[in-house]
Length: 108
Image 1 (cartoon, helix red, strand yellow):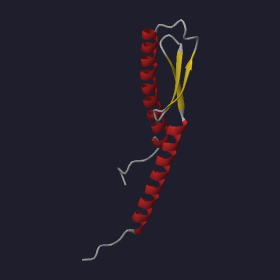
Image 2 (cartoon, one colour; image 1 turned 60 degrees about the vertical axis):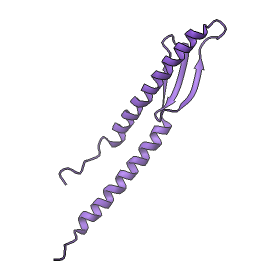
Image 3 (cartoon, one colour; image 1 turned 90 degrees about the vertical axis):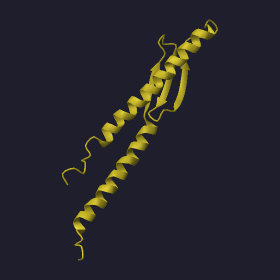
Image 4 (cartoon, one colour; image 1 turned 45 degrees about the horizontal axis):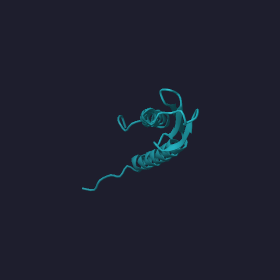
């Protein structure tokens, strides 16, 4: 028995696939382009991180000559941990913005 081909369904599936691919590409571009700035607990170190998790800048506020090495290392670890969390948060937010209105296949 030959199967009937629903060309309308196939065309809609192709359109959905193209739409998904465009959304995915938009999301990937946004993740690389979007950056977030975080500070160490004492506000002396600022780290700028992309939503992809890449640290793109580190800024020190105040001099280093008076800093204790152990204290500086503790502040640096804290701000890097904050940057990791900020990147994750930014990815989730961007994902919601890009894919939030996307309809699922349920009900089709």
